[in-house]
Every structure is written in structure tokens, then in C-alpha cells.
Image 1 (cartoon, rainbow, N blue to C red):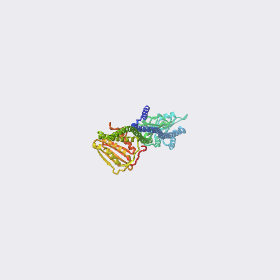
Image 2 (image 1 turned 180 degrees about the horizontal axis):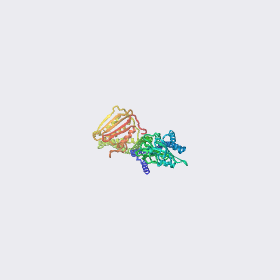
Image 3 (image 1 turned 180 degrees about the vertical axis):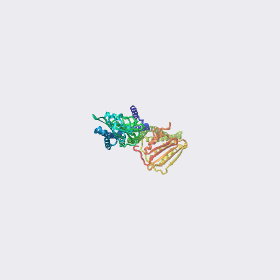
Image 4 (image 1 turned 120 degrees about the vertical axis):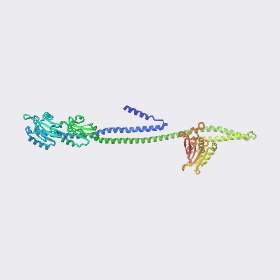
Length: 578
């Protein structure tokens, strides 16, 4: 048992060190919650259980002693009452035998006078008789006609001749009624030898002594002789001179208690005591349930208190642990979010350095192309007879336009990379949106994409950077066009959020995104356009919006479409250092 318990504890504590990796956070917190709950329950309930078991044992012993002690005292007192009752009467018989001569005791009139006095002083004496050395009762006074009866063969007479004084157990004798005999031998050398003075004691007095114990109706008390024969009637186990249906308990002159089961199947407490100089055993029997009722009540109440305490401990431990683990989980999530933001910033910084290098490298050949194209144009203009002059001027013009376009792009890339100061101006956000739409309206017309505008006419002016907002909206609208099929729909809505913020939402009815994709769309180089996109558009857009003091949110459902919402402050809130 102990080996098994030690093995289980070892296995449990070994799991405390085997937490999942950070990426497996749901399982990690589940195990953490379980381990903390189990540990706290073990630490709190195990001592409580041990204390409860110890208290149970100690209280049971104390309660048992408190219950048993009164029974022992009751039996001991009643036993002494029996002994005193019988000792007084035996002493009286002995005193009479020694105070009168054999001739006086053999005189029936004299014996009657002695008996009348004796009855007045002592309760329970039925008759008095004097027997000659042959065992014949020569004088007698009492309610029966027993004068001349021969008792030579009776056991009590033989015992008296041997011991000199004797108290018998209950028997019927000539009178056919239960009684006991007290007899004392009267022997005077040279005068009388073997004469016996006897008195009969009514057993009703025994019943009175037992009744004085005032037992409960379910309890029983009676007197047995040492052979297990009833000397007084029992409520449940037999009448006078019947045999006790249970084995006699071990010899004990001091009151003792035995827990056993009676022939009726009842669990009982049997309290008994043997008489030292008398042939009797006093027994008191009580149902164990009745005696231990107070203990059962206490035990039941203690059990319910224990169960209530355990439930309360479990509830408190579970609630506190759950709250603690949730706070820990929230803290880890905030830390993860901060870590991701740092990653985003780091990636954006890397992209900025890369963009600066790319833009610098591209600007140099662009400058050369621009100079050469300008030189060709100048030479063509100064040569009127140059053949194909018009065609060459048209081609050089196209080259210069392309160079200007590339220069604009590289300037924006350099602006993002060098974190150029924001050029803030008061602008109408609806006008910025319409300007951006002029760049994409031809593609929308070509692909039959429905552009639905829902621009708030009373939208307040904001302070922001026009060029960077154009780049933000252009990137998002281009992504919307990429997401929808030909004939799709893109809805652009502007609205006022509150006193400090306005917003623009761009919604498409394209294929939508999964939650996993939405978790990474603002990361550099992350793209779903396999073989087409670079994965920089939304990360740059995200950086610009943050630089302008705003925020961008995305909501998408697979198969239904995506909505990007850009929130912008009405007043310029560009970040410091940007």
C-alpha cells in the first residue's frame, strides 16, 4: 500500500516539472491549474483528514469512556446494594444463632417471638427455622407448614455444615416458589453439634433493587448464578431458573463491559460484575445504538462539517487558482503581444534598412537614365533635320515619365525607411479617398468591379499627411481588388467614430481569410499571393497608420469577404521620433 502511494506521488510530482512549451499555452495553463489545485487540496485536506481521524479516535475513546463509566458505576452500586442487603440479613441470622441456646431456638414459641422482631427490622425475610443435627426442622415460624421437614439431603444444608454459614442461590424447594436460604451452623461442644438456624429471603426484594436502577425500556438488568441460571426474571432473555442463552462473560469482580450480539441479533453493551462471596452475577444489558446515540450524533455532525469544510476548501482553492491562472495567462498574452509588437517593429526596421538600400541603389541608375534621356531630347531639338525626330521625342518623353514615376516610388520608400517627419495639413478625408480612386477606376472598369461609395458628407476635416494616407488607401484598395473576382463589389465607407476619431472602412465580397491568416497579415513578407506578392504592402500600411497616430482593424469570414477599417485621429498624433 505504501509503495503504491509513494509511486503515485512520485509520478504526480514528476508531472509538475513537465510543463508544455510556451506555444502549447492552453495545455500549459490547464496542467498548471490542475497541479496547483491538486497541490493545494493535498496540503489542506490531508492534514485536515489526519486531524479528523485522530480526533475521531480520541473522541470515540473519550465518548466510550464517558458512556461506559456510568454503566460501571451503576452496576457497582447495585452490586454493593445486593451485598449489603444479603450481608445484613446473614449477620442477623448469625447473631441470633450465637445469642440463643439450641434449646431456646428449638422452642417454637421462642423462635416465633424472635422471628416477629426480625420481620419488623428487616424487609424480605419470609420465615425462620431451626434444624437439629439430623437435618429435621424442629421449630419453624412462617407462612408455610414446614415444621418437621427433613433437609438433610438439600445442597444448602450440606454447604452450611461444611462452611458454617451459607447463602444459597435461588431454588424452589418444598414451597415450590423461588427463594434463597441463609443458614448458619450452631455448634456448642458438649451441648449441641450440627444444629442449623436458617432464614428464607424473598426474591421480590431483588426485583426492587433492580428496579431502583431506573433503566430505559429497551435496557435489561437481572441476576444470574454462576451456572448461568436466572435468579431474577429478564425482559428479553428468560424467567427465573431458566438458563441464560448467552455464554457467561469472563470472571471479573470489578464491573466490566463487553460489546457483543445477543440471540436476537441486537448489538449490545453487556455490563456485569461477579459477587466475591455470593454465588451471583449482576448483569445490565443496553442496546449499543441507544448507548452510543450521542456518539453517533456527534460523529454524523462532525462528518457533515468535515464534508462541508472540504467542499468549501475545494471551492475556494478552485476559484483562487482559476483566477490566478487566468491572470497569469492574461499576463503571458500581454507579454506575447508586446513581444510580437517588438518583432513587428524589428521587422519594419529591417524592411526600412532594406528599402533604403534598394532605393539608393535604384536612384543612381535612374539619375543616369534621366540625364541621358534629357540629353537625347536636347540633341533632337537642336537637330531640325534629324530623321524620326517626332518618334524619338515621344520615346524620350515616355522614358522621362517612367523615371519620374520610379523616383516618386523610391522617394516614398526612402521616406518610410528614413522615417521622414510627417507633413501635417488640414484635409478632407473624402477628397483623399476620391483621389486614390482615380488611380484604380480604370482597373475597376476593366474588371467590371462595382465600387460603392458611402462617404459621410458632414465628415469633419482632419490634420494628417495626404501623401501617406493616399498610400494607405491605395494599398488596401489594391488588396480588395486582388481578393474579389471579376464582377465583384468593393464598398468604401467613411464615418465619424467619436469626438476625436474618424474612420474609413473598405469592404469586399471576396474569398475572405481564416483566423490564422489574419494573425499574420501585417507581418513583413507574409503573403497569400503565391508567386506574385512580396508581403510588404500591409506591413508598410500598418506602419504608416501607426505613425499617423491611428489604428487599423481587420474583420474577415471565409467565403464572405473582408473589411479593413482605418481609424484616424482628427488632430495630428504622430509618434515622437517618427
